Image 1 (cartoon, rainbow, N blue to C red):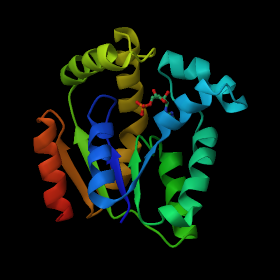
Image 2: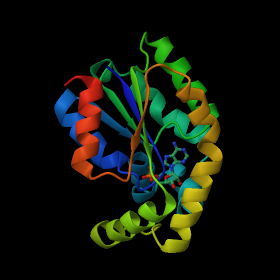
Image 3: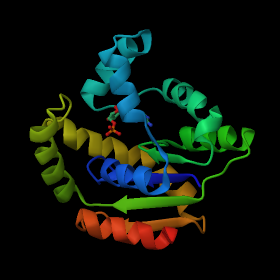
Amino acid sequence: MNLILFGPPGAGKGTQAKYLVNKLNGFQVSTGDMLRDEIQKDTEIGKKIISDMNDGKFVDDEIVNQLIKKIIADPIKTNRLIFDGYPRSLNQAKNLDILLSNSNQKIDFVFFLNVNKETIIKRIEKRKILEKRSDDDLKIILRRYETYMQTTKPVLDFYSKNPNFYEIDGALEIDEITQKIAAFLNV
Ligand code: AMP
């Protein structure tokens, strides 16, 4: 089974992804982690994306699409993909469909963790202290939220028509969200 965790930064996608990795013996596909890794290793991609990442802007679709291509084609990961933070644009969503069908896969569940701006701000502020993420000051947080909401509206429309789309109140406690996801998955 492949699934997508969808929702604005700070909605708790990463936390739920880690739970699902354990529960389903899956692989977390976090483009945010992959991009941070490129920066840390100072690769060619890392050099290209550092300013966008630091400004809270989205990284170019082509770069992100390229990064996930290998993962989707990897037979070890087939039907064990847990997408966290991808796709974030309509271009990425369509690219994902193509890549998955090329390897005879599909998305089985889309979970939209819907959470308002105030809750996001509180959560990211907390995470800032715990994880010391450089892009997480308040101005950037708000820009990331706005960018997310603007750019991902078409993605939301794209997936929300599907019968496998589930909206969950992202303002709930972590455990409550986990329980809801588990109930939908029947695990
Ligand atoms: P995240 O860890 O998912 O919150 O992502 C952190 C940052 O990485 C975002 O603010 C974007 O700059 C970049 N990023 C992560 N995933 C994507 C994506 N799918 N498309 C474009 N940019 C992304």
